[in-house]
Amino acid sequence: MKTLEGIRISKSFKGRQVVNQVDLVVSAGEVIGLLGPNGAGKTTTFRLMLGMLTPETGSIHLNGKDITRHPVYARARLGIAFLPQEPSVFRNMTVRDNLLAVMEMHRHLNKTAVDNALKEMKLTRLEHRRAALLSGGERRKLEIARALILTPDFLLLDEPFAGIDPLQITELQRMILELRERGIGIIITDHNVREILKITDRSYIINRGNVIFHGDSSALIRDERVKSEYLGRDFRWN
Image 1: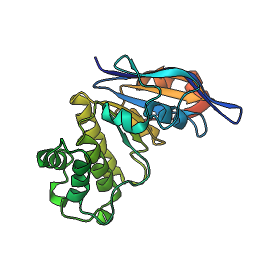
Image 2: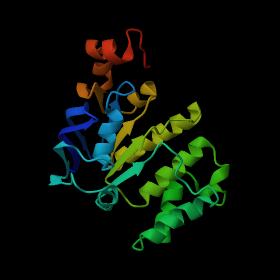
Image 3: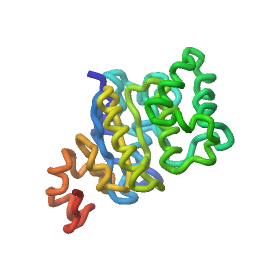
């Protein structure tokens, strides 16, 4: 089975240990949550897995191969796609042209891949609309469609639910689960804990640079340490 794995990865900034020997793995066909308080180390862990940062100790492996020193673009070629929190579409281009721009950078692709991505993310009716006119949820779907054109094995989503309304969140959740059924491994980091827990198979909770919990949603909300350090005693998720 295909896997993306961080093995005892650590990172510090200006003498402060931000990530401390974290172990994390996502397999093909599962959705993993990477959660924790602000400043706890989850964003740094996410960036280490993606290749935006390099761990000081530990390693990153893709299907058993060490890719620790591979930059983001090299990992993308190996099948690791990334959806940033910040808007990344070309605002003055149409939805379709945004996808065609990806095709131009990857000459092995053809227009069938564009049509398939439009259909899969339910963007066909919007294909001639300028990206600047899209809602937050529609823009998110376009960003995911651009990633899917490259047929990734793993998709890392940074705050995918930020700035979009509840109906769009529900639709994105459904689409993420469909990607899981296709065999794509997904890591999500987001502050919207309730919505994340509805779709994750497992979650990692990071606090003060350490993994304080790893398991499914039902176990997570019962864990005393998670309640004490992250969720609070009154947290409800369904």
